[in-house]
View 1 (cartoon, rainbow, N blue to C red):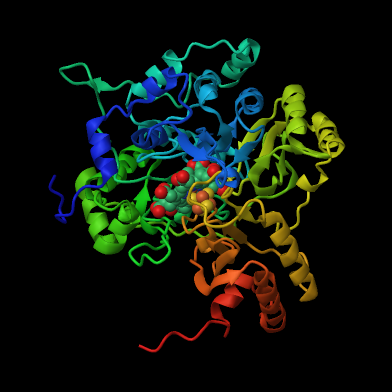
View 2 (cartoon, rainbow, N blue to C red; view 1 turned 90 degrees about the vertical axis):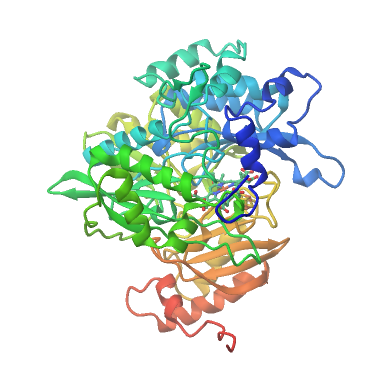
Length: 583
Ligand code: SRM
Ligand code: SF4
């Protein structure tokens, strides 16, 4: 097939063209009681259904133990308590007993065995969420600010986030027919499911609008066509001055513009993305460009036009080079503005001024505008689990059952419980303390800002550890801070097990990017506002030497910094960078 560059289409493009309803052979595999995994081609199709084939990397040397990871959709990280209770139960029955809050405000179930996938996904849908298009070459979970979870502006931003979520859902009917109509199951969740339905006061907000059909009755997807997008697409919302959704790292971002206390619209950002591959110079992290200003009424029409530009101009020959960031970088922001103007009937007005002053979550109790309270909780590496005396999962279940707060997953893998009555605060606090979870109230400003991706043992792409080593690693950095006389100071540290950037290390003050077992590239110089990229400071550093190297930098920082200067801002300018190689 011809492509503009003359290069052949990537294999995934041929797969999508062959089965535009994305059904692959998923039904057949599910019906085969002997199958312990999906076939190679289906591994691509199941992603569009929110499923990743994985195997336990700890056991790989002796055997391949297959399971899948399933990712839910939670626009803005909103999870009603009743829905949370269903997830809690499902994670015990069908997954590894944990729920993982992700860096895009969703939940992931890990370790799901083949025979449990149908029941799990059916029940997620029964509880009025979905896994459709949480992976694959489509728009993923839409992020929206969770700090604060409720005020007038935040509620309107949530409405707009749901509007674009629905508009960008693929119209395939195969998902529903396989997982909802196709799975007959009675898990005895009747009462829990009924409560989950009642808690979401509209129908499933993640159900795609009905599709048009062609002459043969097949659904037509006017936005995605038959081959969807060249690659994944990510959309987020932010409300300055808090950049808690790391808006510049999204393919498309909406930055709320508030004038005289009213949300008048958004600045549109396009072209962010972080994934890279070691040794491949054609790949790089990039922060989004600010394109122009749109009104709330234009959120869906302009958003769909941006997605269509990715659909039409993204590279379908090389999946490593297929994100919209490369279109922006190579064709330029003026080209993009012109292309968008042609599609929406005219140019956008200039963007309005805005300023981010920081990012991340606040921990502890805060009053909502309506008089209720919300509680920001630190969840170490986003993992909701019971482990020894630390019984966070049980505590959250008890709280959800008794007090039914709205759960709000944050984009830094933490959790907010909102809509709490003043009279329930003390009891909720006691439940957490009684379950060994005192740390959730006050993790400190290095743990509380940190993020690590899952990496080993579940992620098939991991080159090094991340989630499992991160807490200890942060403790060493805390010791380094104390030795330098800067104990407890805020610091954004993020770690990933490979260069794909899932915990967004490339705009952290300190980013560690897995290179090989026990080896990481040290990235330095991003800022607390998430508006500057970090740069490679040292390649392939050994995990043991990293806290030592950074500890030395802390000492130098403590001596040289200007008043109030953050570590990332200091290191970006300091004389600590290796000399550039001679031209
Ligand atoms: Fe990611 C692939 C986990 C956010 C860039 N990501 C993966 C997979 C599915 C591995 C795979 O393809 O087999 C990981 C599953 C690991 C596991 O065992 O759970 C995975 N990504 C995650 C999560 C769970 C990390 C976390 O610590 O929370 C995040 C789930 C988000 C969600 O709920 O939708 C997650 N991934 C991100 C982000 C951050 C973000 O979106 O804000 C990025 C960087 C931003 C970006 O997209 O550029 C990110 N993930 C990638 C990439 C690189 C894409 C690229 O353009 O090169 C891959 C690899 C790929 O797609 O081939 C990837
Ligand atoms: Fe896996 Fe790499 Fe993403 Fe970590 S950054 S979850 S190792 S793909």
